[in-house]
Image 1 (tube, helix red, strand yellow):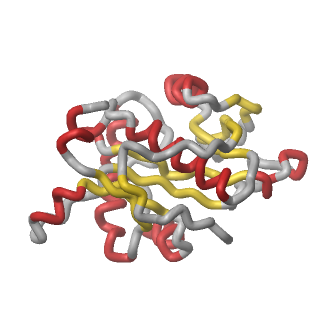
Image 2: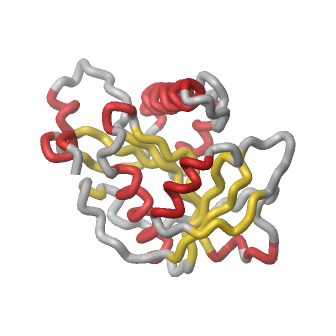
Length: 200
């Protein structure tokens, strides 16, 4: 595990409205890094608040915090990572034949650059799979950029199977992946969500 995770205790919690600026900063930084790599996966500059506020209101956006930041109440540090997990199957990608209700779906997974390589993305995927399993659903699913083979390889190494790629001209995403839900313990962070079932 990366040194950061050993020296900095981490906790996963649901995002609150006051977290919006930090989430937007993290996603904008991630989008800028992607663009520097020549990848057009997310809009340059990140997402507007109109894309993120509904996730917070629906209580499906989760943040990973460095708990040491609370020692300095004046410091408005962005989250270490973010992930949205819900039962909203994008109808442009997932068809009735996929049984869309049989899965939870990952969106907006991002890890702050200083924490890259720390294994937090893996840990959040495992947490999401455990949430799907707790909800009695057999699958964990996601869609990712059609033009990002490195990201697609990453998901394959994490046990996801590529189902197909939906090539829509107005969508940069469309590579569809799923893996079986498994009840894997979260060891890289404290889970403050109390393994609540996610409902629409």
